Image (cartoon, rainbow, N blue to C red):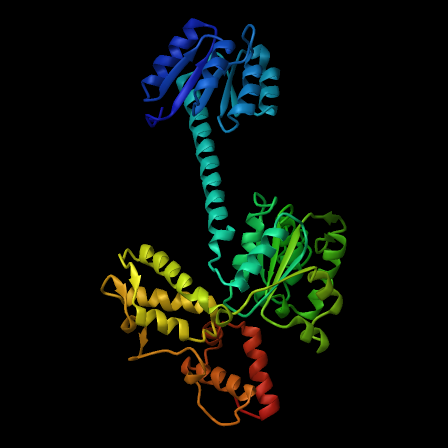
Length: 460
């Protein structure tokens, strides 16, 4: 039997002295800490005062039976795995014990090797439960309301609205510029809702593969199309009971908008190639950096879908509208990246902090995080100085000063200049250009087509 960790404590419960002595010796030899109870009544008293990593109990005992003890454990220590020891003639009772929550059963007489296999599986099961709980706790902490930094009136209004809507099942539309933290807000709502223990599924609407969009969302049956070798569940099925996030829903193709509308209205769908109607209980949250009302007016977004999504609207302010939060955010990112890169940087100089507060931040909180991360990497002392924020020998202003100052320049010209300059710098690599500008490939492609159509430019 594999060597156990000293802290793994097992309670052995059996009314036969020979069985107790055998198990005490066998388990102690393998470094388990073993406690003994002579019957179910004594075991129950012990369990009122102590907790164990595993309980190994006989099923048939006078007075308090193994089933009685199992019910007590499930009520008071539900994560403790219980292994039932049973004689051949009581296997049906052992199966009933598993239905009530026992991890497994072993039939007497058994060998050390048989017991070893069950114990290994039981402790692995307990370890996975503990890891999953810790992961969920970390997620709840990471995406709690406290993870969104800010004291400004604008962001406090967002906090208050999030607290109100999180416990409900209402569909939510989160609006805001790129980099303002829309996904963070969506996750915070999920992990502070009754659905927090259920899946959170994110769908990047701009990256849905053309031709496989329906399969991605609704799944397909075996043989529904070429290479559909097995049944596949879509995102809606996977998110059942939880939350599904449509990130940048303004990028969704018109054809798919109609199909999504039906699911939102009926809460049901069919897999591709299937006839079974599948019902789901899913909370829908959508984010967008576009003005969907304008998209509706231009015929690029369905009006009925917009009203279906816009039950509750949360608008995230740009960083330039909450400048008083910049020092808090800067120190938050300093702490995060200081720990990540193992640097003991405890402060930001007054000059550097003033510079950060004066910047325009077109990339919003995401851009500020990137700038602080770079400064942490470059810093050689214990305080971030102005020089750590220098790029190419000067501090970036992040505002219109970075653009050519031409009297009477239009917004179209400014946008075109930024996109084409970035495209040129990236040697016309559209993927990298879209990443730098924090827009989707589809948006970049549409902009380039717009410049060709309106201006007659030859653009690669």
